[in-house]
Length: 171
Image (cartoon, rainbow, N blue to C red; front, side, top):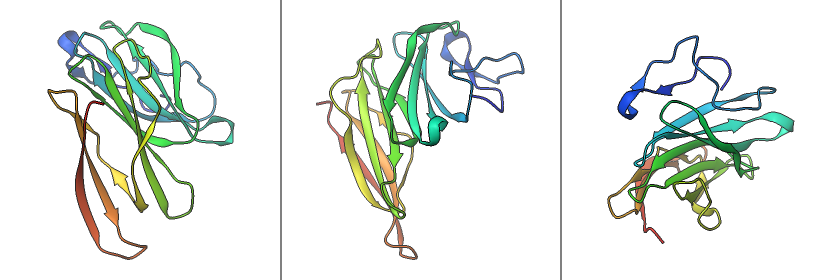
């Protein structure tokens, strides 16, 4: 991502502070590319997801890296209509990407898509939840490859805030 130096993975997958000599996770450098999220993968290496605001829209993209930060394959488009992406590793070696989509002024939909360890999508994206003023935390993968996701919601523009946890099976 441009702007602040991106985070990078160090030895053993431990996060280290990026320096000015860090590297961009995205290969497209024009327009605004940012709001990156990283996850260390169980089989080694890591995956980055970010928001691409180029071309007048808002898209989510991903890139896999080896343990030294070398790119594995090309950037992969996750969705052409989303932002605020998060990524989490799953126990089977794959990972889950989640993001927001806002089809109207106050409605926010939360979507997700599973990927295998090679970065191949496992099925279509699916809607996790929707409602007014929704925001999600990063999903957490569980040992059985299912995952949980916390959703914070406001019921209406000035309504009551509440949080809920959603559990999804590996299927």
